[in-house]
Length: 195
DNA sequence: TAGAGGATTGAT
DNA sequence: TCAATCCTCTAC
Image 1 (tube, rainbow, N blue to C red):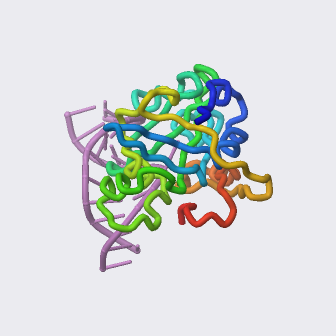
Image 2 (cartoon, helix red, strand yellow):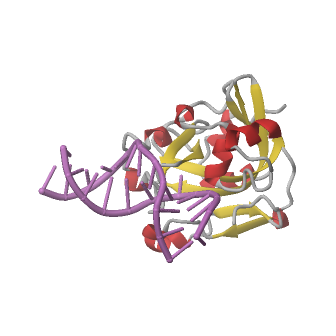
């Protein structure tokens, strides 16, 4: 086990961090049960662009953990149904974050099935709202340090640059031309990437 | 304090 | 294509 240090998160280039998170392993450890998966899809968000909740340094009750130091979680409820998990990056006051959009399941498959009430692991973590449910992530994780006993990210698999795909982010039409930024990153040909 | 809408998902 | 579902944010 090799947990990513705080210095990995406290950097300015959020798209570089989003790329480098591909292949890393996200782990949750709740109720003494461990579940984990390899990150296969991410999206970068920055206070400098319109797709971000913290655009133009707008701080609200919901997004204030984005303004904390890199290396904590930003979790919020989307559409009243799904929890979305982000990794906060950059220095305090610089509200950047990386949304984790899909995982390839590794440990705790039985627990994932129980949490999501399904019998098949097919596509069980291939979407931002689904992976949080499978890993037991909810808003109590908001603001948590990514080096706590309940959630962390560790080294996973090595990737070659040509295995990484960049494309437009999903579901942010309201962001105008910022919606066209190629800030979504995924592992090429990985079946766990969201549809 | 009311009203609109969302970084999604799964069923039709 | 559409509903589920509820919290957040904005405007009044």
